[in-house]
Length: 259
Image 1 (spheres, one colour):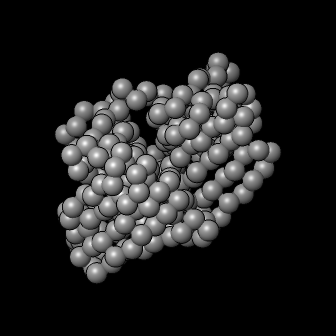
Image 2 (cartoon, rainbow, N blue to C red):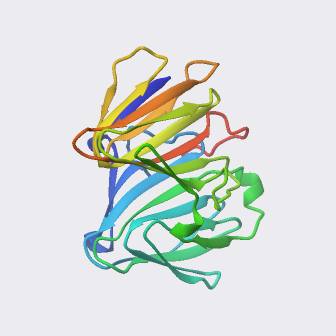
């Protein structure tokens, strides 16, 4: 297992509505230089916060699957399908853009914080489908707690969000000093953002020293062992740790768009 840690200054930055909404882009738009161009079918990943009430006007999307995950606050969505919805803490909005859709977003409370994540399905197939919009409140997601670690499953498995793209997404929260072990299939890879606190990561079978994790770090974990390996994550003893993680196949089984 190889673990690569990218600090905030190796990631992209963006701003909307005159700088009222600022974001850190772990994986940025095509043409923007960042350390990580994509992680398999995970094509774009932005994490932002509103310094003031802010709006991103109507703009188009096609074929990709777009997930907006709300960390805190209130996010409003409207689109050319006739949707006008809001979602709050821990909720998500999902656009399967299909043959094409226009949408706009607004952050209606100061401090609203969220992520927008783009996944790439098999484009020649999904582009033939009509666009859809779906919304999911926090209480619809399965949440499990064990030994001071809370695991929320957001996409895939028993989560309500099921995409055409093969992907799993998790929200992991650690109390200070607690640890969590994640088994990584040898045909899959994991990417995650540290959105709160600090801690350590370690490939338990690799015999390597633990790697420090700090607030805003973006981490990409890939397999080395065909039998699979285990990743251990541990929160610092003085503060908790919160991680948003996404797992996708190394090879999705179709050609990916060249950014």
